[in-house]
Image (cartoon, rainbow, N blue to C red; front, side, top):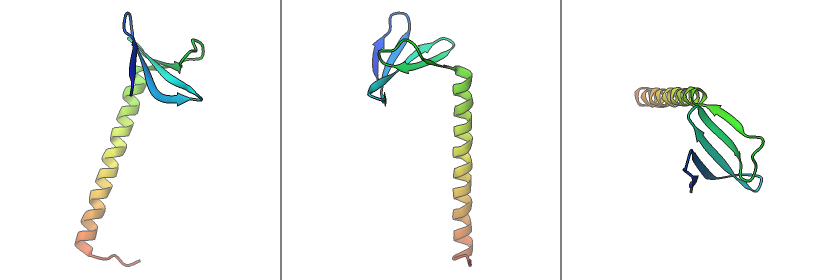
Length: 85
């Protein structure tokens, strides 16, 4: 379960995901997220909110396309019965 570590000036979360043997720490900033290993101050990975929104849009489009293809396959199997090879 994700655990809240610090909330005085910023939101800091410890996730159950591990990098090596260390948990992943996510620091929520006004401009985005900083991701790092627990116990390390150096070597963090900054991610902007725009990158998060863009990735969410890509995932939503992929899910919509997969759902559309599944419903199309279902309609073909109901109409035509067994399709020849």
